[in-house]
Amino acid sequence: MLIQWYPGHMHKAKKALKDILSRIDIFIEVLDARIPFSSANPMLATICGSKPCIKVLNKSDLADSDITKEWHYFLEHERNVKSISLTTEDPNRTFCILELCNKILLRRSQSIKNIQALIMGIPNSGKSTLINILAKRDIACTGDEPAVTKVQQRIKLKQGIVLIDTPGMLWPNLRNINIGYRLAITGAIRETAFDNIEIACYAISYFRQRYPKLIKKRYNLARLIGDELEILEDIGVKRGCFRVGGKVDFERISKILITDFRSMMLGSITLETPGMIKNELAECLNIKAR
Ligand SMILES: Nc1nc2c(ncn2[C@@H]2O[C@H](COP(=O)(O)OP(=O)(O)OP(=O)(O)O)[C@@H](O)[C@H]2O)c(=O)[nH]1
Ligand SMILES: [Mg+2]
Image 1 (spheres, rainbow, N blue to C red):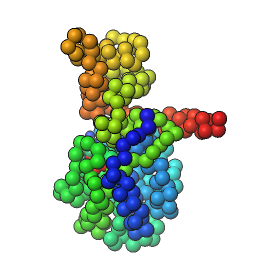
Image 2: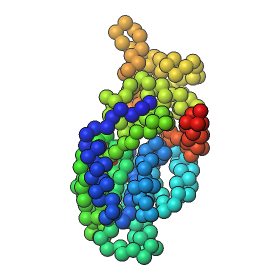
Image 3: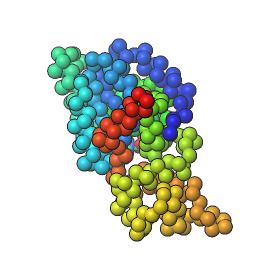
Image 4: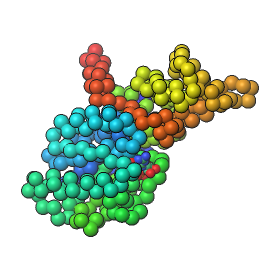
């Protein structure tokens, strides 16, 4: 699925980001732990240059903890990158990020006075929430929908670190269509920019492969029979989700499935593993070479 949602403030935010890059000491990319690859900025290495970057696997409470471990291992192979899992379930741990900033910059013999830390990431990954925890007050607007933050905001912490909150940004990833689907399932794209039934079917095709027990348990299904649309129909029947006339309301049951995933009613699920991504990237290269 190609992402067709680039609101005007996102273009402005990209320009505003370029304007301050030279003054940044450290980058903090807030990834969604359920989609550490799809939520990553493909231009990050170019943006950071030789400066250090901390990759936060945020919302780790929603992700599959075994796969989160695999992602840490994978991410720390990148140059100048450290990774850390965070969740609002354990706000005290969030403060480790300040220690990590100090440690990394001290190791580079850089002054740790007035560190400028840029917080970046896709919409809805939890950037502003993380800043509010660190600032110990609700200084940045947050909300459970993408594109809450529209302009940059600077927050000076007592510890001498200036955090720069930025609006969530997306990049066209034309080669790997899976990225758009995963961003839509997790809530990084406005609902009006995608088809709920298409997204629900994509989610079912993944869940039936990787988490069949969770989906069977949630919807009380003995077996997962037929194609994705048929399974969606079975779920609709089990949930009594009918339109006038007795047919399953596919739109409504799709929204229920997506909401169940986002609110963890299905369980802890990660939508991509490092192994899957390696295969997808190889496939994209093959298509390009053909
Ligand atoms: N379950 C869970 N939810 C979280 C976590 N962190 C943030 N959230 C929720 O995610 C939603 C988005 O959080 P924000 O901080 O507004 O996200 P943002 O990245 O600033 O979003 P934009 O400004 O739109 O780019 C809010 O409903 C938060 O409560 C987390 O660790 N776990
Ligand atoms: Mg925000």
